[in-house]
Length: 205
Image (cartoon, rainbow, N blue to C red; front, side):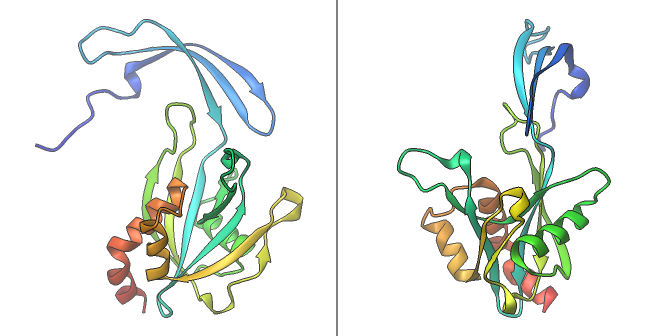
């Protein structure tokens, strides 16, 4: 039997809401209660929720060269002891008011990887850390011509310093197998490509 959720948004009561912090990001403090699996309602609890807006991620893929374009940049949240805080990632950006996902995908791929997205294929929609963050990420694979990909890009006014890399599809998937991709959205997209790469290449070539 197919699994179905037992509860929905109407099974949560937000009793109180306030802004705990407002800066580059926002933190909301919620007092809430929700229905319990055994019946009844949970006693009210206080939870802080990190608000950073929704994001679109793009895996630029060149079906002719059978290659993917990934970007490398510094991430302050990855400062963990001696681990390098430079991440190999998808192209990604926050959705601004009035923007469609396709517009974000094309804008960010142009700004961060100097590639033009010719076609988009949806990969997945997920929440990276729903226990603490409201962000939803919508992932796509974008058809590109990787011939001119490379160099350093990004917007200096946003503190971006982005190095562009091109990998064969096999080499990119080997990075996953070697546990060298320590960020979730890139792992999801590359695993999707591992499953659908041949079909996608046939469709886009």
